Image 1 (tube, rainbow, N blue to C red):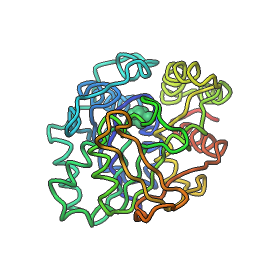
Image 2 (image 1 turned 60 degrees about the vertical axis):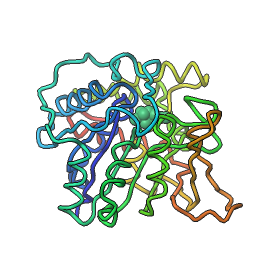
Image 3 (image 1 turned 90 degrees about the vertical axis):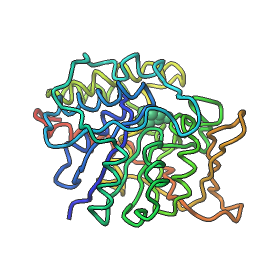
Image 4 (image 1 turned 180 degrees about the vertical axis):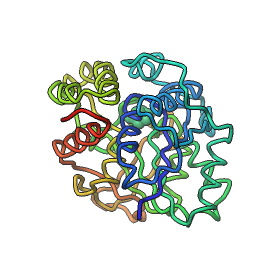
Length: 314
Ligand code: RIB
Ligand code: CA
């Protein structure tokens, strides 16, 4: 039985590569739809970018939806300095053939949870859409089989502020609602995503595959990694969002631990901080399977293998 999933994203080069990984794995993942949210760039661009990834991968049967264009309470923060003005710098932006579905993303997710009794939600951007679903239809929570998210940080501290990871920082109130919802959660924070760096060698392997999807991936990585390579002085950038889809496909690549994750939603100094109680020093209830280690080579071998499914060879 294929796992039914909805990917909720803010493309963003790394979100886009996560979509490619899912597009290449339709034999295992029943991708009900792609929903988009404001984050890396405004919603008008994230929805367009998601549609363009469908074009590049020649995926014509996955509907794409636009969702919330701002966080629940706070002003939108964006990350053009990381992702470029378009959000997917590294590929030429075109007006996509894939249409935007006219249903709101939140309504689509609610409709899907009504239709199916087990849907895995995969948010890789600010969690505004997911939180809105939970707030509007709490009775549908049992239909959420699991939430597999990219967000938060423990030892890595923060990337957009000294103490907060971008997805949680943009909408800390939404993240708090999600982490507190009571459904099974597997979370990939900066501590694990910073272990899957898109090194020059790995990008060269991708470039050598030789199809439109791998070419787009190599182009986006070449742009995406320049900011973090300089910032961290590393060879390559953390490939954040594809960790979620990779876990769905090969969970054995990762190590996770049940912990409590709580979100700071008030302090202006540490807003969006995720307090990860890794050593269980509090009595806060376990609410998350926190990913803390990964077989990075195995992760990239999976990515190479799936990218090659679009043609060419690894
Ligand atoms: O902090 C990394 C996260 O923020 C990733 O999901 C990236 O795409 C941005 O949304
Ligand atoms: Ca993202």
